[in-house]
Length: 70
Image (cartoon, rainbow, N blue to C red; front, side, top):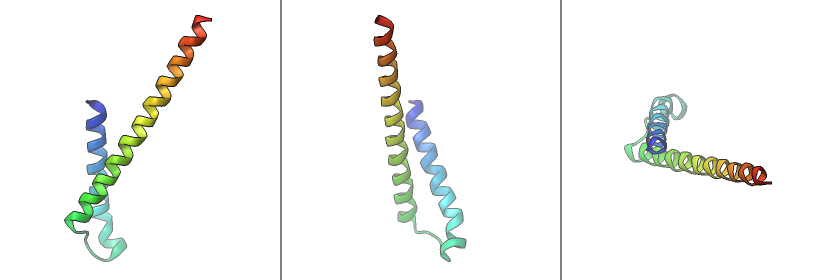
């Protein structure tokens, strides 16, 4: 549950940051669908990075467990 909440918060923060930075960088405000697409992309990227980190941690724990059995 924490993982889901952290991903949602990161996506909202990225969309808000882009919404504030876009007028000075692009010279125009982003449309709502552009902000939504940016938030979705950040959410998917955050979810993928978190899943990768969980996989690496699980692999490391299994390796430690296997080495402890020897």
